[in-house]
Length: 71
Image (cartoon, rainbow, N blue to C red):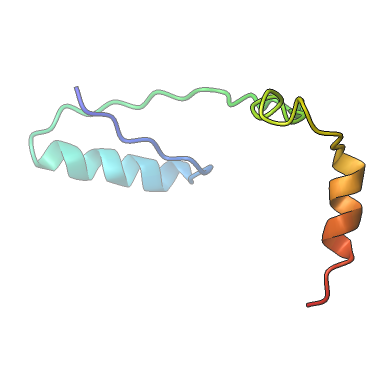
């Protein structure tokens, strides 16, 4: 099975046209819709925590240093 994922909300008429087009080529096509849930929880350096365990580093310090740069 091959899947085509359409990520944006698309007009029903366009979806119907796409399904009709695919069926004219003899492809068995069907529509399945899902509700997308987003995870609004932000990660706090969890992936790199072990990398910086021996250093005194905080997100606030990094932010301050980044804004001090001359561009």
